[in-house]
Image 1: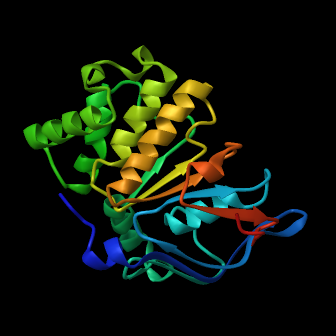
Image 2: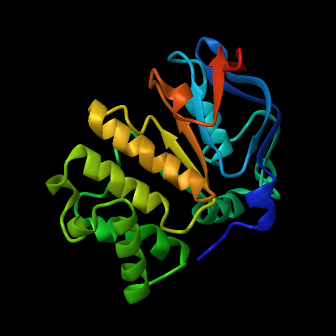
Length: 235
């Protein structure tokens, strides 16, 4: 499977124009992302950094189609994400975006391989023996094929995060977003996960990572620094 078009591989995969996200609260409107415009190239490993509450996760959620912008436009490849209705957005997201969470979010009653197979089943990209074969290939890619038939609770934190990355790759998405993927891991395991994400970017995917890693600048190709919802000083 390969959903990445030539334009997505070679051009600007992500383009935001004057994007804002405003949340309503009992205390009034809160602007989490404030008039952000940026272009991000395909096949890059990009770190999104900033203090807590700076809008990092909101920005990534907007790009991934997990949230809607209040104003502005968002394009990923040749798709105007902000223009899609809910059904079309869900279909697009399932095939084009892989999501990795800080706390893994693996289903505890499914084996590791079954967790990786689940997005394929939901999107109809592979079923049965074909889905199992692809799941094992992905688990081999992230270095835990031998854990395929275990439940997630039998794995270490680092192994669970690797399983979550394999699941995010299940439908060969060109965009991988990771929200604090090393926030729950020790330093050695964090380094292994960051190295894995970087290798995926080198293979052609765009990897967008929210992180508090102190030395992120030396690990990624580009840093987006947010300050109160706006793009701050470049790194």
